[in-house]
Length: 80
Image (cartoon, rainbow, N blue to C red; front, side, top):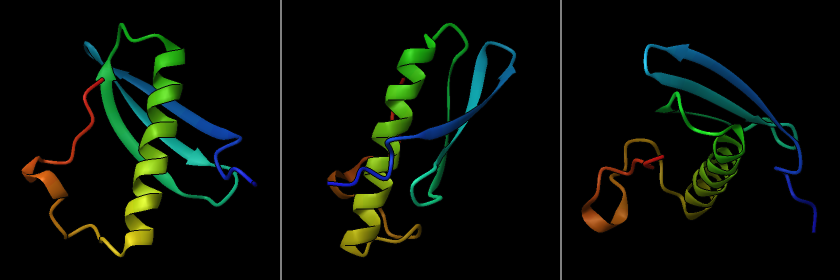
């Protein structure tokens, strides 16, 4: 199986007590972003980026768009 997230590019910008993370999958160009605590370990940010890329990709494959509310009644965010 060819993993589109075998290689990801991370851009991290510290803003006060948080870090803004932008992750791009080198395999297919899918891009996600999120904010995490500045104290988070880089390995945790990489893991979270892979999880969010997989979530967004799976949601797109199900046909769920940006404007569709997430299932489960939550806001759809991922807490770091």
